[in-house]
Image 1 (tube, helix red, strand yellow):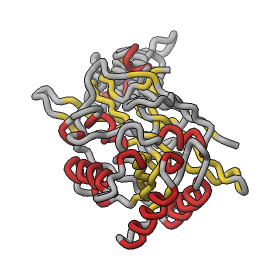
Image 2: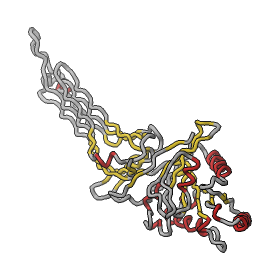
Image 3: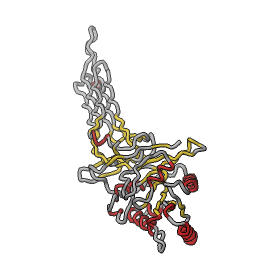
Image 4: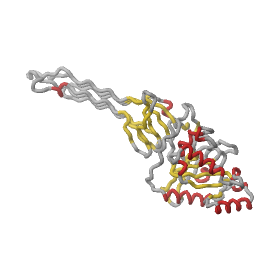
Length: 367
């Protein structure tokens, strides 16, 4: 499956049907009068958030979407049929921007909740038939109203992943290994940087309550200068914006004993430069790959964390060490936040390049 987080499409609402010019003609009924029916309304274009979808790939294959036109009116006061609305299902987390002729754009819809619907192009109104225009002084109107055209828009669709927790850190920090341990996601794992090129989603299910779930997004590794587009840059920083809290993972290989938390601060500075609000997002700090460290060095780092007042979790995702306390902290932080707390919606991210997309590991669950 292709993961596409950017697409441009054109939507056209249906035209309204024309009103009918008709007169009643029956034997022994002279001057029966006008009886032309009204035209039907054109169908509208509606965007709907669908939880099962994870990519905008289909909208790269088809660019034009048109609703049905309304049918014209008929004689005997028969109104034309209304055109059917066109409902476009989009992944939850999609932003829809209307593109103006001057090159600007405006936000039309933010589909952040499953089932949410937004009307973006209204269908044209059907024309009135001549029966509508008869009066005491104009008993035989020989005209009807034409149907109105429907609205047409050029849209830019941008997908920002919605998740409870976002995993971030320097390249090769072990984020993919961690998500493979706590969910059934099977992302690509290798011993070199930038193994993950697209976001991976996993669903963590409470073993005591199967209905209690947490969505975790594995964001590709960030480097210094990411806020300016360096590395994978803007394209994936925008996905971090749509998470409730962050799990910041640092490999023990990137820990300097003189300044052990420099790796955390480097990424945090990139977050602040990209979005001031994002720099203050609640996060859990994790040092991974502790199986590579000598016991005395690991204990010294634990003491340093306590002395610095940092609640750092030390784990080895590969060896499954320290995972349970970290998962318990994830649930604790998630439950401490309001269930209906709105997700953050900063709109600072730069658009992705037209052909900038790769494969994605889609949603998995772990029973």
